[in-house]
Image (cartoon, rainbow, N blue to C red; front, side):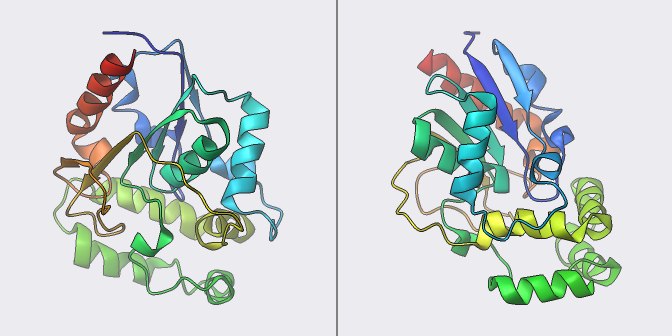
Length: 227
């Protein structure tokens, strides 16, 4: 297997680096860097920060350059998309998007979302039970969904909003970049499938955790073809 340069892993909304623990060992690199949006965004409200500004912060902090590779899950893929816009590095989007309109959510207005988060009406055990019954009953992704949801439910609300702003706060410039590899399941209950070509997997939003081979093999094959 060919080795590439550094690989950055960016988790999705509410997630930690363990979301990649079943695929990263199979992907060779000269160095793996696992980012933590919880730590990087912090608990102080960042009302002016959009995803492109955050991407530029990561580029400066980690000296991300064009030879690096970014692998992002969900929100992490959205962040990777904007990093590529700035440094033209290669990116892999897993269960992600290049347009927030593909997110399956009843809310997209930040003022409404902020009120719901602050009041505890957006992420609570009743909402979690609704999703478990509707989308995750009897599925192998059930536990990782619960882990992620509870982290958001119990996490600092300012931090949660900082992450949500990365999704829903408009970026004032046109993004013209194109992901190098998209990996998605048609049964993803959280993000609609991209309109562009993608590598299809089974499972759902958390396929990289429940069916990791289906995710790391196309990445390995792509890296081998690139390097």
